[in-house]
Image 1 (cartoon, protein in one colour):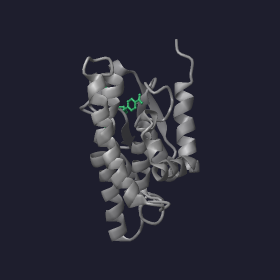
Image 2 (cartoon, helix red, strand yellow):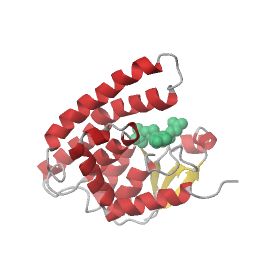
Image 3 (cartoon, rainbow, N blue to C red):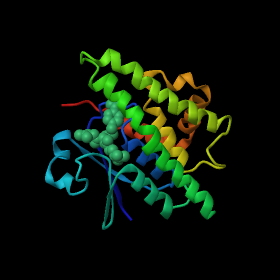
Length: 215
Ligand code: GTB
């Protein structure tokens, strides 16, 4: 089985591991699967060969023999269903882990993305300074709820799972705003994720791409 994923030829985050290929790399490392990476320029993401893999013209994509997938949630669920290490054996515990994957991308990630848009993409608009505190408060509200739930648990539901992987990577995106550090148990949870050897390998691999000198 040959697995190929796509990633930015140069990530806008400069190699901080915030682009979404990092979460797929992490899942592959947790599962012990070798993979190739095809680097894609932004212009090429919008052209037919890449649009055939992802109609929205985004990375990462996932190819495995005849199968092509996009959406990190679907990719990581596919990896987790077919390889040990990312989902518990018990059916109910599996369903809970999948619930957390959805919560990460559907409930936590949207306000974090709004904040990125408000601070970075639209930070120079005249209304930005009025909007940013409102969006930050929406992120804080979700983080407060999640922090209360997580309390001092090591992981969400017993052993580390794909639910934790997705949640940790989604939370990481909020770190540059400073909000993550307002919630010490969430910051510690993210740090536990980052300390995993599989995450370290994934992070190093994406950093190696982004540290390459450019023409
Ligand atoms: N829902 C999809 C998924 O989960 O796979 C979202 C995929 C997505 O947003 N991909 C982004 C992309 O291809 C890259 S990760 N963007 C190019 C485009 O849409 O034209 C998003 C990302 C971008 C920048 C940073 N950063 O600078 O910190 C972090 C994450």
